[in-house]
Amino acid sequence: MHLDFPFHVDGRGRSAATDHAGHVRDMIEQLVFTQAGERVNRPDFGSGLLQLVFAGNSPELAATVQFTLQAALQRWLQDVIEVRALQVSAQDAALTVELTYLLLRTREEQSARFTRAI
Figure 1 (cartoon, rainbow, N blue to C red):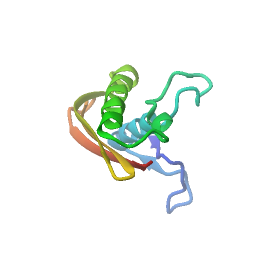
Figure 2: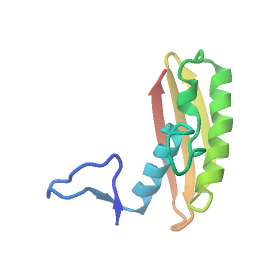
Figure 3: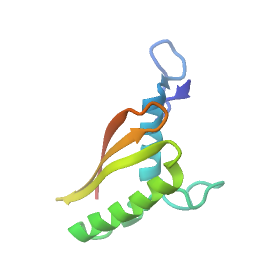
Figure 4: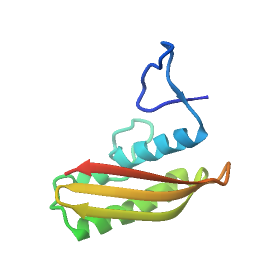
């Protein structure tokens, strides 16, 4: 059993749980939106995406985020997923991360999309 992220209470009044695929997606989301230095016991955990919030939104910013996110996924989640495709795009005031990955435990291919307004 894995606790769902963000933490919330389910319809039975208990801590909400999720399956393995949901847990892995939650871990990816945490990695994407965690800044380096934010976690006390893992100060270098994170992708650096939120550090670029005040940078001008551009294709160069998207390429930078894609490069740093690819490295972070390999470093922190290589024993859980295999990245199949990663696309970061900058449009208007939003940065969108689209990720296709293989769950190593079940060999299922999954997709996730994360958007953050800048």
